[in-house]
Image (cartoon, rainbow, N blue to C red; front, side, top):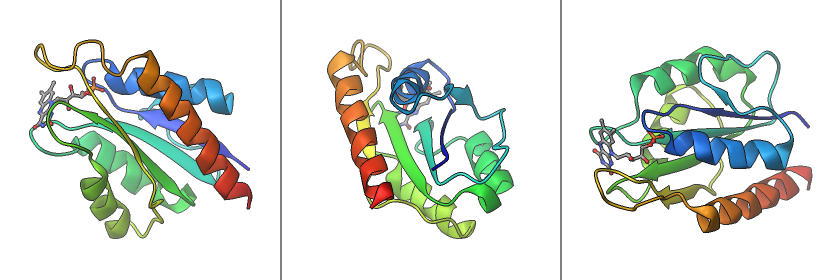
Length: 139
Ligand SMILES: Cc1cc2nc3c(=O)[nH]c(=O)nc-3n(C[C@H](O)[C@H](O)[C@H](O)COP(=O)(O)O)c2cc1C
């Protein structure tokens, strides 16, 4: 099974999430300037919410790599919103990509809110989530 992680970050929170995933899947945490080089059974896409939406660079990455993504798993942080899943689901639908029903979200530090989040507990929970997704993928 080929499992990959990519992230887009403005302030570092999505990178933290991607590094935790990379440790679990034993693959580098790469940002979205790195296209997928082969078919990917599970892609963990780590992203944040900016001005109530997902950054257009993430949309472009998904579009350009769509044919290689077998299952997209959304991993988000945000200051106020509870998740970027709804927006990511729209992007997946537009590009004919299967998106997992399961997602992971943690609060992300933003202008004095959610200090140090995602924190070590968030990252531990994320690693458990990743294990579960991979286990599901094997069955
Ligand atoms: C320019 C900017 C705009 C943001 N707009 C929103 C927003 O509209 N809604 C929200 O819930 N959080 C918003 N946030 C907070 C981010 O979603 C949150 O800090 C997230 O963890 C950022 O992830 P990153 O560190 O990977 O960039 C914004 C943050 C920035 C920097």
